[in-house]
Amino acid sequence: AQSVTQPDIHITVSEGASLELRCNYSYGATPYLFWYVQSPGQGLQLLLKYFSGDTLVQGIKGFEAEFKRSQSSFNLRKPSVHWSDAAEYFCAVGAIEKSSGDKLTFGTGTRLAVRP
Amino acid sequence: KAGVTQTPRYLIKTRGQQVTLSCSPISGHRSVSWYQQTPGQGLQFLFEYFSETQRNKGNFPGRFSGRQFSNSRSEMNVSTLELGDSALYLCASSYTGLAGLSDTQYFGPGTRLTVL
Image 1: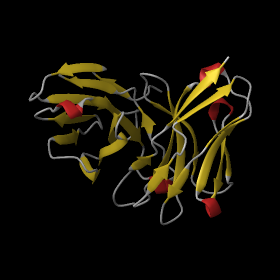
Image 2: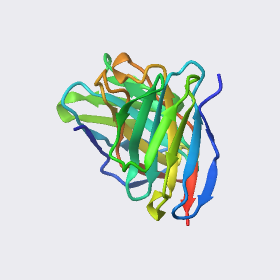
Image 3: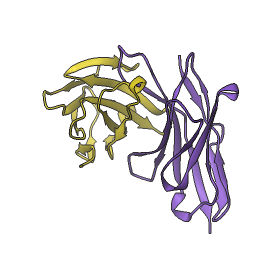
Image 4: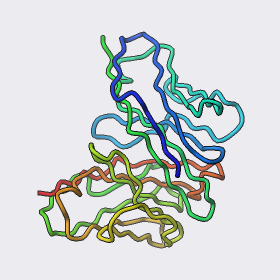
């Protein structure tokens, strides 16, 4: 069964500092990986996704993530954090069983706070 | 293009009642998935529908059910509500519901259900 681990529950960074959120996955084959962001009281917004090809993926809002198969990781990065980035971030892995339809397995999330 | 819409946004029910939540997918999307989000369990997959057929189901009791209409709109129903059913219920839509075809799920804002 697929699983996702986000080891950091809370992270606080200063505005303008760099950010890295960790994500480790467990899956038997090539995974399809996603990062979503959720602001308080809102749904999930897709930041970026990895299906295949280039292991460095660019997303919206200046975020990027790097897929490292050898480490089973898909860490999210941003070179300079803005106060508006404060939110909860979820890493997810997608099932690829073509007969059974979509099923995302999510990590427990990392809540990001930004110091002014 | 309009996003995924969910109605109602907020709902308060009492134990033992039943509730129906509605989800309208992005135009052209034929797959609709439902997720439950709680502070304790995080984001958990409920079920996925495609062309009015349930293709995938998570580990939830039979009190949780759903259906999809010919226009791809979906409803989920929870019967005999329990306090633990209080959660944010998120709906997501995609074209095919198959991540293996480089598809992506887009989420609605959710319905906040409170069971008293």
